[in-house]
Amino acid sequence: MAYDVEVDSRIRRVIKTWGNSSSKKMFGGTCHLLNGNMFCGVYREFLILRLGEKGSAEALMNPFVKPMDITGKPMKGWVMVEKQGIENDEELSAWLEKARAFAMSLPSKTPPEG
View: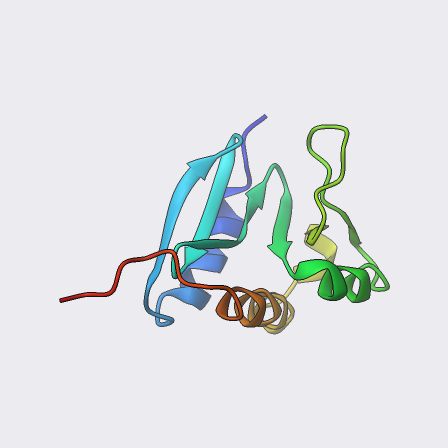
């Protein structure tokens, strides 16, 4: 099944000014990386977010959020948000900022420039 390119386009608009971000095709969708660490992406029609174990537990208390499970075994620290949970840019940005904060807490996987 194809991934939702409209959701991916919306993500790209939000993160384009963040710096040190990149994207790549993965698991039939797309993933976005910050400092070399995956932090979000699109799988089918879902926004996927890396929030860490505490952040994902908190996120699961929200409507339209479920554990990220694309293989039959949920991925710890990740969640999937249905389109109803990101209907406007404010909702999308809020979720992306949570994933950004978690990614920034991780050691960088990109070599320093220079």
